[in-house]
Image (cartoon, rainbow, N blue to C red; front, side, top):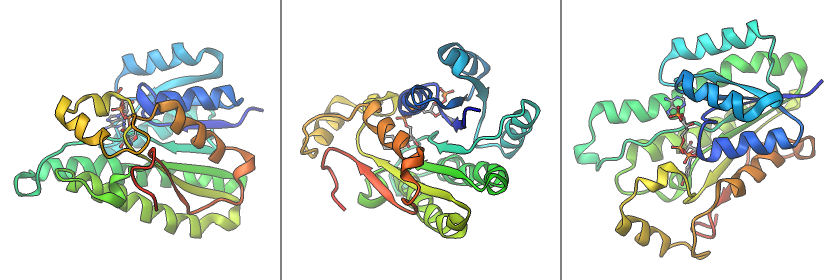
Length: 241
Ligand SMILES: NC(=O)c1ccc[n+]([C@@H]2O[C@H](COP(=O)([O-])OP(=O)(O)OC[C@H]3O[C@@H](n4cnc5c(N)ncnc54)[C@H](OP(=O)(O)O)[C@@H]3O)[C@@H](O)[C@H]2O)c1
């Protein structure tokens, strides 16, 4: 039987590329979007290789509903790619509580709850691959992104703690930290912001979603069984750890 991989935020950008890469590698891929229409598009794109589901990580009930649907459909993911994430940028002095809570709720708390819910299946199978998508901003910081940097730095710490808890069960937990990747998230930047950002990237270009997806596909494979608790950067040299 094909291994099942769940990819959150698979409707666009990095998540879409990850879903494609995992399907190419023989996984049955379940991808999420925030709307039914987005989920239907994922199903259409994956065809026989998987299915789209609806998920809003900011609502605990929505996470529980997805987990229930997976159970009904008899789908037990052995690979979880926590890719979905949002930004709500503002300078700290102006940041509203909703902007702080929104980003922490989706990018950190939501990821915790979904991971916790799917962990039991992996523990039972004594096999799993969890890959969390962070950001270079977790290490570098970025003005206007205190909420996002906190959520991603929290995600990295959470991944190391979880990796230590479950390594003996043959379940790995790793983080991929992209730099500036060509997706809807970066297309929101103004021309001057984009130029300033690119001037700091030694590679002199944005990364492509596929360049992140290939690393995720490696971490999801059997070959990566002794890599755990690690954060791997994909950033064209913007930050070297
Ligand atoms: N692009 C970059 O330069 C960059 C750099 C560093 C890190 N990252 C990280 O990489 C990941 C993917 O980024 P991206 O640039 O590919 O993003 P993107 O193009 O903006 O796509 C975001 C994805 O997340 C889904 N999503 C949005 N809000 C959600 C919610 N509340 N619950 C569940 N899913 C939700 C979206 O679904 P809908 O289509 O339904 O809205 C979409 O599939 C994120 O974690 C991001 O922080 C990106």
